[in-house]
Length: 102
Image 1: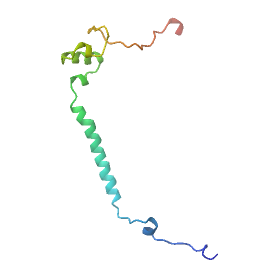
Image 2: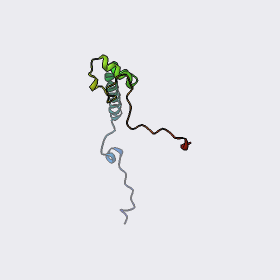
Image 3: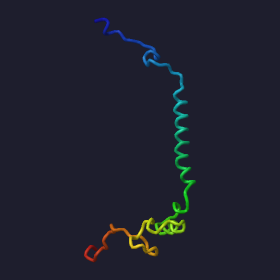
Image 4: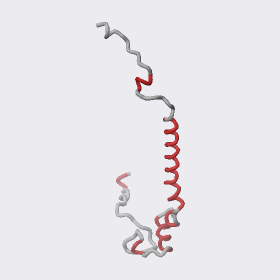
């Protein structure tokens, strides 16, 4: 019964089963720096290689850029009737509100 009441004192290195060298902060810092550099490269390299088609703001501008680049009309997304002068439409357009909805 006397053994159960004794306090056990163990020094820090034995309790952790490791030494505290302070190297982990360098590993985490270098890893963070490498991750930031990698993500920056993944973002910047494709942005530098964008052409005029990718920078066009609207679908009409993109279709016009594709036509200027020599892409065949059937390969340009848009209207199925092939009219290049009309903007593309979607089959899933919202219905027009009726007077009874107001």
